[in-house]
Length: 553
Image (cartoon, rainbow, N blue to C red; front, top):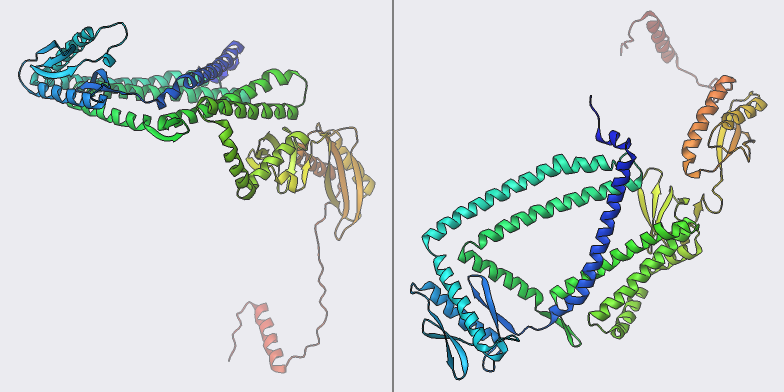
């Protein structure tokens, strides 16, 4: 006995409810995560632009500690001298000796009887003496140099290669295992929980969201797996560890170094990327808040769908505007200085962006005046469809063929728009019909009325009407007029009525004519020569006898 997951799923309402709750939980967690990330980025991201006067002491790509600026040397110079001497000690085969002595009332670290570093007051954190700091650093240097010398032996390199091969093997097995788990366990479970192709649009969106979330988690897990394996392998060997540290240090340095200055603040590439991410998160959060307001609050107020869309749009763009101002102010930008930018932008809108400004102004007119609303069935030039969304610049229309058409808002004010749902959705549909001459016109009237009377989409009040339009070239022209409350389905309604009309006409033996033309040709005053008459006579005789005609000439 075979069965499908979605069929069984429909038999358990609790499972559908669980899937909907799961999708809601995912959206709420996403919103909470974006909010927390926004708060953390606002709190800590501006510190990226600050100048850090410190340099690290590095041994084979591993940072031991950092030194600060002193009275005589900068942090970069001090770190360069220490790193060079430590590298020389690592490459030598002599045992490492690190000592701490006091010279000129300052603790000094010696490496193999050579001066390495003098610990100053700027290097010591609060709650620790200079001698304690020097002893701690000396111990770290001795252990790290000894470890670096051991990592350059042949025995260590052999074991490191074996560990690298094992790490790659484990990563490949886990990569394959994650793919199998997703393909044969998680993905079918999601399809069973939310069968989007059989449920409503909301559940279809839930299914799509869960599928995208699952694939994203799978991709992130695989990428993190291989990045972890590569990071582990590069840390096994001193040379690769040095290069990875240099590459990371170069990338971080290029990203956090000041790119330009604006007023008293300096901004790096990372700062600009974080600002762009914050603005993008602000847009997403504003959209989510507007959707929650529309679905959780405005839906229970009793206002129509168009008013709900209008309030949601106003709330969304208000949040985006106010949030952008707050972000820019917290980021150190003077909002008053944006007046010049606003003036230049106004000039640009007046000249180069006049079409966008026209569409935006038309969108405001559509929102407040509401000649069309979300859910209306409209006809604009060559297409018909239902209004799905009214945005700031364009409107989304879903046609009868389920094709989405994005129309600029200005076209609704520049051209004539037929709104079948405006005010009252009840509309009248015309069906022209022609019958043959000689038909009983009263019988035609009753047949047309009978064909439309029992249709479920035809309203009984106002009742169907039949008009005698006149005498055509080949037919008597009638027109059937019916009323319907579903104008978006008028094509299907016309098709059904024409089927019924054809059946009624056949039952009452009413003929539907087709155009006819008669051509009358009289005797032409043409005289033929005797020779041509003989040839034609011979041709007729041979054709009658079944013989082919052959001329002697």
